[in-house]
Length: 328
Image (cartoon, rainbow, N blue to C red; front, side, top):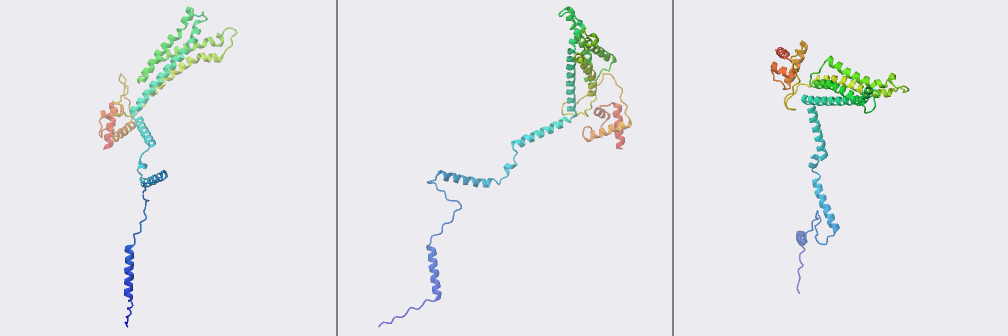
């Protein structure tokens, strides 16, 4: 009879080691768990149009999310902004140019020519308007197309031409800074205008009307309108031109319209204006401003002062001496 020896029970350490070996074996044999993809894999086969459109939208959204944080497009000027900046720069330069004395002198000369032209055209039309009234007076009831009737049309033109000669000469010389102040010419102008006014008004005055014809004030005013306008133009034009000649545009700087502007000077010697001490001090202050602006040297001579102030040499020397005394 065979006796069997019972197997000894495993110790706790052996059991723990066996469990660890079993767990390690199972871990090595198990396949790794697939990672969750951030972007779904691209499937090329069997895609529908809807899938492709959605994929393109998602791709576009990713690109836009990156680009929309860039502020470079916001820093660029649009076409409207550039157009407005160009207009503002142009307005600024035009304003600066308008303040230049040379430009102001050019604008005054241009306006002066325009006013003289308009005045002479208005005067010519006013005298032409009165031609019919003068012809009625000069014809004195002559038959149409008779010699007296035809020559009556020439009365107003030759008087108008004589008047335009006087007015034109005064207007032109006024624009050149040499206005004619002649009492004889003024009397000639008023004589021509009085004759024109009288011949236009006489046939329509109450005592000159034919028997049975009523007096009409509106008709009288209509026929004397031309001579009245002529009187107004002849009176106002020399006053306007004299005001233009007294304009002071300030010292003219070079570089805008070319050579330095020189005012009209008389052909004959004219006595220099006498300045008081207060005037000399004011001129000295003006010269100091020109020196500060760089228009004159730091120590200008009498010739430079005379040229800048457009005054006489005696006045320039007095201003130079006043500057020297104030400097000491």
